[in-house]
Length: 230
Image (cartoon, rainbow, N blue to C red; front, top):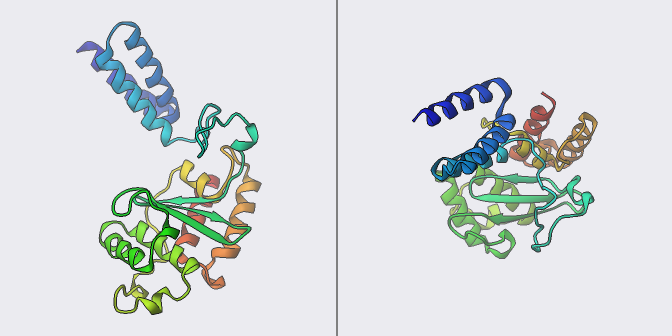
């Protein structure tokens, strides 16, 4: 009981005094100490909490011992630099290739989970739109942006099935983490202010509403810049 109370007090102090990154490291160390004393019931929750905090901090997005999409270890330092922008939501994850003006995506959970967006028919995509309209607005707007870029006539073809004109959102009120901001702008794990501005400018040239781009994606890109430079 005293050990639990001690850990709780220390956890709160570190979090409010030094932030989530320091807390993640401290929880991991406390987990090791608990493990060395045979307190397995305490060690496991500490390790889990440490992992959850690490996921939401600005630790490197890909650690040297992590694996790439083919299951191979990422030992090349060049693999941990800038990458294509990624925007994620509860149900979707899309990757943008600014040079080729392409957008690919994948359903990460729920209906059609695990399937690539480019493998789905218009009927499948609109089924997802109807679902996301009631379940998760961010996923809905991301899918609308994907369809606008990859299916030019989808609004006309699906008229009467999914009325999208009144569902476009110009901004998002949800806050994003530093990690999400780095992924959205396609930056390395510790970008400079000039890199943030350059990537922001590049993406806005493509996705600014005045250029026929997506209001939702433009809002996300602006939020990412503000998060990293604020």
